[in-house]
Length: 103
Image (cartoon, rainbow, N blue to C red; front, side, top):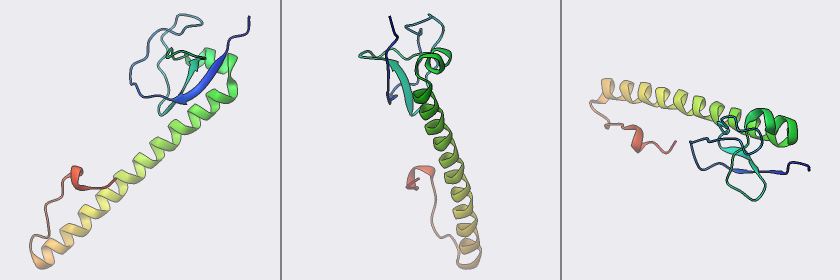
């Protein structure tokens, strides 16, 4: 019997056991490969074996999230530098908290 998979948004940080081989699944984020019709994440090896295109898409999505997180951190640092310059020039501009930033 052919193993059927589907790719969808992974809304959990927890893995579990792969429904095909029993190894830890350690699902990708933000997309993961699941056994079709279930919430059981497939491990990386089984995803590559039974659904290679889906596994590639999940890996690309994960790399893009990591890249965007890196860019966001860069711009947060730049914003803090600009605020520091403004503060040195005019006095306290505002108090920045990560929660105040839109990214």
